[in-house]
Amino acid sequence: MQADKKKVEKLVKTARGQLDGILRMIEQDRYCVDISNQILAAQAVLTRANKEILKAHMEKCVEHAVQAGDSHEKMTELMALLDKIMK
Image (tube, rainbow, N blue to C red; front, side):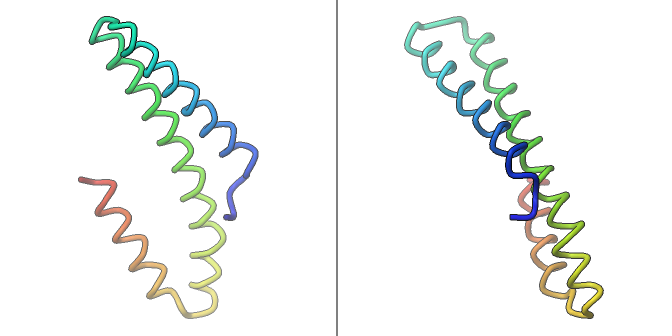
């Protein structure tokens, strides 16, 4: 992985903490909208982590492949990933 590992780890650990909190909220039978808001917050943190990883991938792995004249595979991977993101 080419991304800043400490930054990504911190984001994922934050999301893990949020997920643990969501589970507690469910166990405590908390208000549905409050639970939903916490789920959205966890998703946002994971989205930030994913952006960090993809940004580094594009800046390093994809750029290297383009410079080497071997970008087809990397572009195919990115298009497949974009299809998943856009669903």
